[in-house]
Image (cartoon, rainbow, N blue to C red; front, side):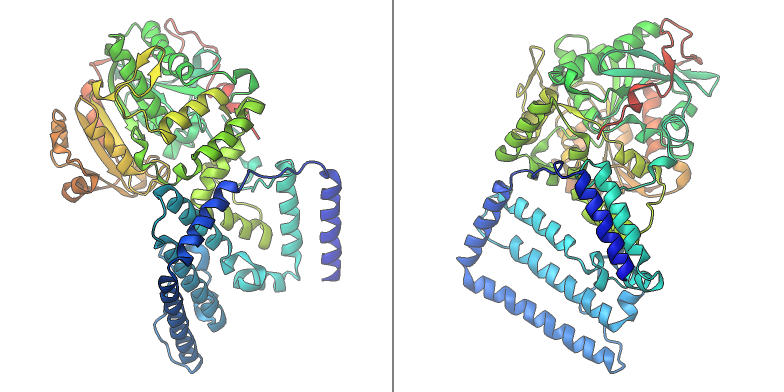
Length: 587
């Protein structure tokens, strides 16, 4: 142990000497401090309620002590409290079998429940302050879990004894490597970065880059069928992540599946912007993004229109483009629109809205304007906080306490392959949509001189939401059924923002809900105003939503033609897929 302590000290000193001037103070905590001060003030203003909460906690502990004493006497009482079924922090058998660790676990769960319930029942807080207090209370509760500490995690204790502490030395080395990789800021390794290479074992679907500008490369994929749908398909991924979430590997690639269904698939691969693109606006992303891609496709293939899929932020951009084209009397270039986990009404934006108050947004804009963009890891950190136990603390335990190397996992490699955000575009998006919720208001925002009105969208739309989505809550995505003028087919998939979308039929996983008469597709009156009312009457179907979409999209194929090879028409090959834009990495 003396040798381990000496080695640990040496490693830390070496790191500090190399990075003595690299550390910087994090974002201003004034806004958060003010929220908790207001919560504490109101809590203390109702001492009776606070006393009632403390008595309740005391009673819970009395029950736990009695239960633990009974176990020590050989009885098997029911636990006072148990973890949620999806809580993987306490999966080690010792948390149940060992009386001490069972007590620690239940004590933590009781205290966590008490703390969260206490702050949630404080009266008089405005909605934004209440959400902020609740979110950061949960962050604290998650951080203080006994599984996150050496002496209260049975698996870590066993490993430490068996390896004579080598796991802690290796864990410190992993910690220092992650600090080194983050230039002084902790950038937790979620997967083996050396195990994947874009174009080699992720983003491998064959195709060619056939068009590009300063914001995107357009990929046309090689067909696998003799005949294809006459009308081509364009996919707009979010620029907040890279497109290959839809092409991780052949087994779960939506791109491959769509190509195998006889679609001529085009994919936008967004640039990873630097300071040179700082002034690129939301308008630029619309005009030089999907509109430029559609114009290239229609001219290159000699077609009049395309079908379009927009994923997440790509779907929000698609909705703006549809309204824009309607005003410009060019809406006929898009025959149908598919929206995957897309928000157009940000009133129910979920926990991401916590980060968009005026103080935090101003501080973020100052930081972006200084550099010209938002760093990719800063946005990734925000998303990781939404699922801290899965995306932060599980890796702290694995990498730093157990001293293990992260498992090679393509999804987590993609998640770590972050992208930057141009300052002007990102500021417009956050202020006008997240903060002010102007997109849902007819004429609320103006793009290229056109007042955007989503109620004018007349194209048939397929709207997919996911039930456990923590980024685009499904009740927010449901707003499309009450907004678009054209016929809407709404589908709710099980699972979350990624797993609910990337769910190939062959996997036989999850399920989805759809209106029993949704195939009529001509009347939005089948959708009640409240999403919960729709869910009560919707039909629950097993398996992936992909075949449901293919059945719907076949109505807009415009017949069939011989398969189109990339580069055979007017669209000339620039380079092989996946192209060069997607390979640009950001810190």
